[in-house]
Image 1 (cartoon, one colour):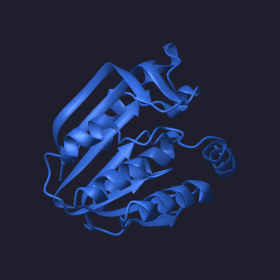
Image 2 (cartoon, rainbow, N blue to C red):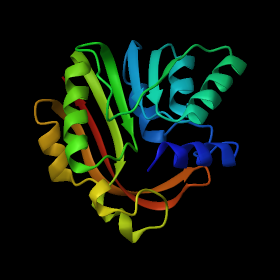
Image 3 (spheres, one colour):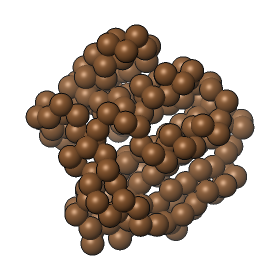
Image 4 (cartoon, rainbow, N blue to C red):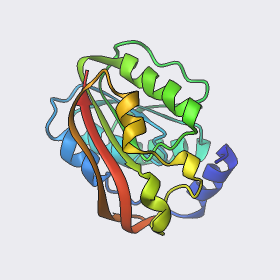
Length: 198
């Protein structure tokens, strides 16, 4: 989806995916000692604000100016600091061994870009760093709770296992959950949840 699509979506409603953090992200972050956190495709900043409030040094990026604007506006209103840059996943170059945690929350990419970006994320984790992911699975097309309608942008367990085969996996589940994240993530959904350390 284009930058214009996301700018239009983020400007159309007050909070597209709600103001609360993703539940799986929130649960997993509680198990970690706060450090540096990267949030790609962070949109309006709901996960970034939660992490910053809980002591994390947050680095986020998105290609939507409207998403960045709203996230920084909310951070200022809450007296929080987040480092939020405008970057396109297709061009971004992540620094090596920089982050204690990286969270990929509903980051859907075409096959080849997915593999390249996931490899960048692995490289960007510090030794001992943690990757957290929640993503719509290939079975999400049977549900109307959100996510891409293009099957090429939905992920299988086998694909993700290959992408992250150098990490030590502690959680790796495909399951049906009930989403309640703003207007665009509502109802039963088929997701893959992954937690792994470098």
